[in-house]
Structure formats: structure tokens, C-alpha cells
Length: 520
Image 1 (tube, rainbow, N blue to C red):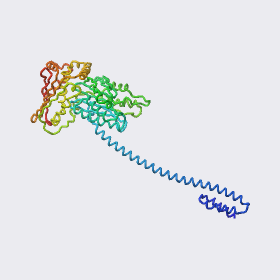
Image 2 (cartoon, one colour; image 1 turned 90 degrees about the vertical axis):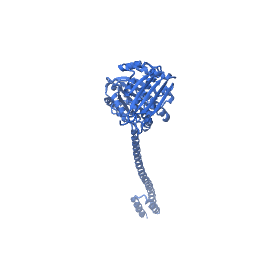
Image 3 (cartoon, rainbow, N blue to C red; image 1 turned 180 degrees about the vertical axis):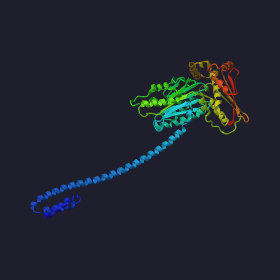
Image 4 (cartoon, helix red, strand yellow; image 1 turned 60 degrees about the vertical axis):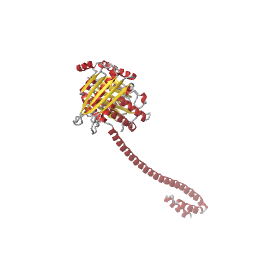
């Protein structure tokens, strides 16, 4: 019997199949234990031996099953991971496509034509797909160039969204002839109402007047603006920020007063966002104002200056990528180039026949402090004449004669102050002080329009003020001798009009401007 059991056990052991043991082992043990007593020890040993093998087999079976489950689980995880990767890749492609559409929209909404004027050079380099920096240029109907350079809080799309209302306000108000002071005030009002308190717009607005030889700068939170000499390009003036960024202050607390600089043909304006001076190198050192000023003093022509700053930044960074948006602008006072830009100003004329009309606008006392009536008058003229009139030249005439009435008639400012650069600045400081204290006084603007059959029409302008008047005959003699800085506004009006003359005590001035129909 035992000889029958042992081979059976041996077969079961040689089989090595854990699944066979439960069926074979009980029979083998039974046969052994039923043998003679001497074989009981062998049976017990076999029982222990087989029990040990059974435990090993069970552990092997358990490990095998667990391993199978693990392989199945890993395969499922791999499939899930691959599915997630494909979904993530698809979502990323969709986001990039949407960003490209949004980027195209932003580019379409940002006017670049005025920035291509021959007296302008600029550089824009984004840190990310969307740029928080904003650079705009536009030409007023009277030929003055407006510039806006700004930097919204943060980076990317969130920073770019704030640029949309700024673009609209800047371009539309410039087209209507408003000053940068009024434009800055309106941008601040709109951003203060619409943006969260933690988002603001560090910005600089500049107005370059080739006729008056004047640069106006409103700087709110940007690095210093530089005025460079025509002779050698060295720094003539450094205009630091005097105001907080736009969007922080409420309307009643906002100060829109600009800094004024007397400039001449060939003088240059340079402005940049903080990304330029805050760019760091491998050692964590910032580029800084000193290095920027070294380049400004060394390089003269604006196109060469644009490249020199870029090269200086590359050399300084030593391969370190840019850490912020980089934007800067260089402008030269070139009267011919600016006249060309004014001629290319996009007039939105409509078909229609202008008629005869008359308008009168009278401003008194405190209203004279902060209201510029010239853009309103020009807008009404364009609407009444179906935009047939090219308002640029006539805006120059109205603007010069109104400013003359306000400054010298109501405020009684002395023109001789403007004969020197120091006096020029003192003149405008005194002007602002007197405006803030103004309680009385009056300026009236009258415009009559008459159609000339088949030949366009005439705009007859009369500006009257409540001042004491002046000896306008002495002004005529001074203009004839081309003596002095002041009086150039009247001289310009006479160049553009058929007739300009003073009446009474000099507190009334009459001008007749002739316009011709489109295509004549």
C-alpha cells in the first residue's frame, strides 16, 4: 500500500501543479497511515512535507493571481493615461487655436498705421503670447502727433483685456482733436469704473506740436521720458513720473496737467516701459537707467537708436531670456514728416450737400478752466457739412485764435515770457495757476458757413473775449519782422485763411477760411 502511495505522491510532486495537490494529498495520507506502525513516521513526515508544499503552492497561487490583477490594473491605467494625454493634447490645441483668434483680434484692433510714419521708430517684444504693454500713435486733424505707451498690471491675456477700452478712447478722442490731458482723464475715468482695484495702467501720453514747437507729456507710473537734443542726440530733459498710474484715482482726484517742453526741429522724444530697465542678467542685476542713458547719449538717429538698445540688452542679458514685455519708442520732431502724416489722416467723409448754418458757443467763468471747446466746434462742423470739410486746417485756426483769446484776453498773460526757454515754462505754469483761480471772464466763438455754388464754401469765424484788448497794430509789425517766439499762432492762421484781422480794442478777431468740395 505504501508503495502505491509514494509514487502517487511523487507524481503529484513532480507535476508541480498547485491545483492538483488538494485532490491527491488526502488519498496519499490515508494510504500511508493505514500501513504498518513502522511506516507511520514516514507518513507523518510525508504529511508535514506535503503540507509545507501546499502552503508554498497557495502562496504561489495567491502571488500569481495578484500579479495577474496588477498587470490588468496597470494596463487599464496605461489606457486611461493615454486617453487623458490625448484629451489634454486636444484641449491644448483648442486653447492655442482660440488664443490665435484672440491675438488676431487684438492685432486688428491696435492701429499701427500711424506708427509707420517716417519720424517714428519703435520696438515691441512680448514676454508671452499676449502683451500687457500697449503702444499707440495717432495724428490729430491739426497735424499734432499723439503717442501713448503703457503697461497693464500682470502678463498675458488678463493684462491684454484692459487695452481694448484704452485703444478706443485714445483713437476716437485724438481724431476729434482732444488734447492728451483730456484723453488721459477719460481713460482714467473709464478704467477706474471698469477694472478691479488690483489692476491698473502705468502709462505715458505725449503730444508733439510742430507748429508751436511744444511737447506735452503726462507720465503716470512709467520710467522717465527723455528729450534728446537735435544737435548731438544727448539728453536735454528727463521727465519723471509725476502721477499715479491710470485707473487708480477717482475722477475728482485726478490731475490731468502735463509737463511742457519747448522743442525745435530735430529734437527727439524717447519713452519705454519698465521691462527695459528692469531686464536682468545671469547675476540677477538689472539693466537700469544708467545703461539706457549711456546708449541714448551715444546713438543719435532714431532707427540706429532702436537697434542699439536691443543690442545693449542682448549683450547685457548674456543669453538670459527676457523677463517682461519690452517696448520703447523714439520720435523725432520732423515737420515735413508730420505734415505728411497729417495729409494721410483718414477723413471719413460722407456723400451729401452742405448747407448754410450758424453756430455760437459761449464759455464763462469756471467753465473755461477745464473745457476745451475746439474739438466740439470741429465735430459740429464736420457733422453739419456731411464731413466734406477737411477739418485739420480749420482746427488749427480755431485752436490758435481761441487760445489767444483765453490766454491774453481773459487770463492777461504776457507773451514776452515765451521769448526764452525758461520763460516758456514759467508762462505755462502761470497759465495753469490763473486758470485754477478763474471765476469770471468770457469767450464767445461764432462760426458762419456759406455755400459757394460749385466751389465748396466759406467758414467765417469770430472769437470775442472779455479782456481789455491789446495794441494789435504792434502785433502786425512784430509779425511782419518775424521778431519773437510769440504771435506765431496768428501768423499761421493768416497763412491758412483768406483773411484774419483784429477788431475793436483787439479783443475780437475775425477769420475767413475757404474750403473746396472733395475732388475739386
